[in-house]
Image (tube, rainbow, N blue to C red; front, side, top):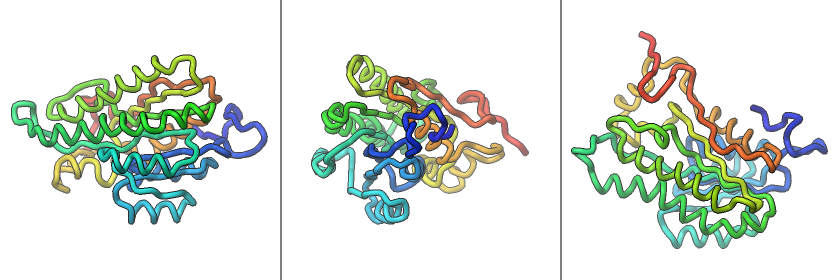
Length: 261
């Protein structure tokens, strides 16, 4: 899914993202970092936000992006981030995560609150703040990095699946509300993606995190998701990719994963 295919908006030989400013949240690692790297390569003027400023600045220096501190759960941080931006054409809502794998009967409500705050409220907070700039661009894009967990539930994932179902319906609702305006609403929903932190943050144990992917031949990696994000964003602006679900070939569904011995 190359963004430089003949069907992209750039028909003058320039890179597809030339002249467009793309904001990527949660960009200090994983899918966010890969997406920022890919969009910079596609010619976007990339602004990256996250809480870990040291990582953020190192990435920005390596790809030619602008780094700004951002905690989507903090209204003051969101206000400062928004005020520092003159123009926004693309918002990639990637900040999120899973923080437990407990069944509902053993639910840690603090973990639930954290999961919802980061994945849902934080996403709403930043989208609301940047929507005027996206409208003003004349060709804005709001892209939500969701999950197949937002489409199908599974045992031991209630806090995360509930939050990602929230992200999914947020994208659907916003698309309805913006119908007729020059802003696309896109959702990318990955299945099993092997990154350095997601499962570790969820389980709190490296051995348990490694077991999630054990025996799975070629799980998705962050670059695979970034490729799909870049492809969706570089379609002609009258083309809206409402929902793109991607999984590794080894994963046919949430509960159906081929594992080798």
